[in-house]
Image 1 (cartoon, one colour):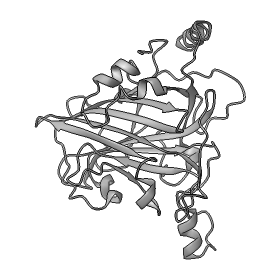
Image 2 (spheres, one colour; image 1 turned 135 degrees about the vertical axis):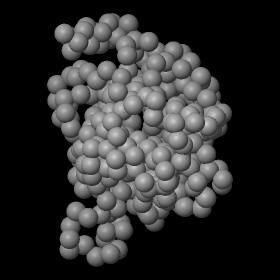
Image 3 (spheres, helix red, strand yellow; image 1 turned 90 degrees about the vertical axis):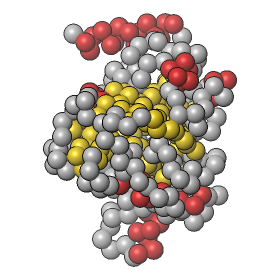
Image 4 (cartoon, helix red, strand yellow; image 1 turned 135 degrees about the horizontal axis):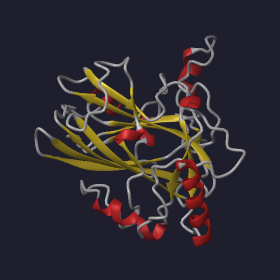
Length: 297
């Protein structure tokens, strides 16, 4: 079911009462209903199914900011790095989907497998989520008086950072940066895949879904509380795209959706995303079109 209601990359303020994390944009994230989920193959290394189900990309490289303080601070150059990103969500399992098609003149991925926390060192994608829109310091450093156990408990507890990579020798292409990765990265909470073709440039596809948690207890899956995703809800999210051209961890560029530093720590520096349900009416889509037109003036 292709959605062409409007260009999803546009960010529209559709209602009052939405307090943005950063900026005045609210990005639209459309639902992938149960009937369409089987049409998306996370392991096929193609975005053709995403184009069929979701439609146009949610975001493109020109929607991102190039951080001048990271590595070479390289600005956007499609001859160096270009990408398209699709986003979606599902209400049944309260999960968020992401696919990225990336064309990179030099692709760095020598990840040996075994530790998904190391995926950030290679050409990948970082996907951060604040499902209940509360913001805050989410990496366990909020209180200098916390014990080591308290820091571990609160790291990634109220918001989470995930990583995705196109290929991995052990087949694990999704990584959560926090304690409890042994279960958070597994079904039914996360899954992913992808593929890579060509050289100079290399085209990669990263496909994944992950779970946002309002309260993630690293050593107690049963006590953890996934975010309840529903149509109309506003969540916080952030995307970062690293680019390495010479070696792992040797940044050439680092692109972020909000242009903010330390989003790995502060969830209030995320962007806002409004979840749009699959039962959208023609009247509602027409209204969104008028709002979009007013923003374009």
